[in-house]
Length: 249
Image (tube, rainbow, N blue to C red):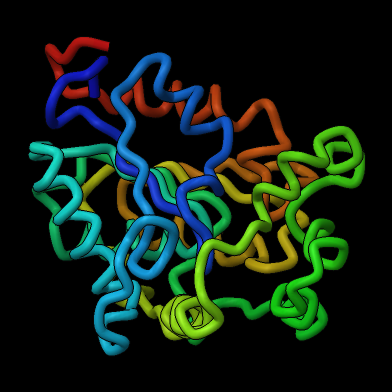
């Protein structure tokens, strides 16, 4: 990946029911060094709704590749958080020639083969109450001094029907058996206190993805890419090391 070079571009996606705002300042920070493409999943923000049967993480991966096609990008480093990380897994499996590397933040390969969350975390997540959801994502200290960022993060950009389809797509995701087929180098970043996706899932993914490294962030929650200043430099270092020989950066 290089500054503005086609084929050396990170494409980024976020979690269910939200647009690319979920990457927050992280996307803007990467843009200082790299060309960054952020997009809204179908039915979110500026993207059209499409057919209900196409709301699967695998279909979302094809959508992401269509975005790369439209941008004239042959190959990209792919950064996904939460459901976006699940979409990124399918991009790497189904479109290996398009994926230079993966950054998988606060995600898993699916609930069926992984470690599930406590029902109380699910209840807080679907409550729609930012006061209940915020502790799942951010440290109380960070949330207190960044109220605007917290509000923006939880601002719903989809209808109730679309949001339900996104949650269902994320819930039904299952890529455990195909993770060994991923050819791209992968960085897995996960918080030790992630109540929405227990850190054991990250350990299991790292064991299955051949060329992967895992950073467990002590005390990190589901929004660690926003509230922990160490995360972005780790991502930038990984992307720099993942550059093809001879590429500018």
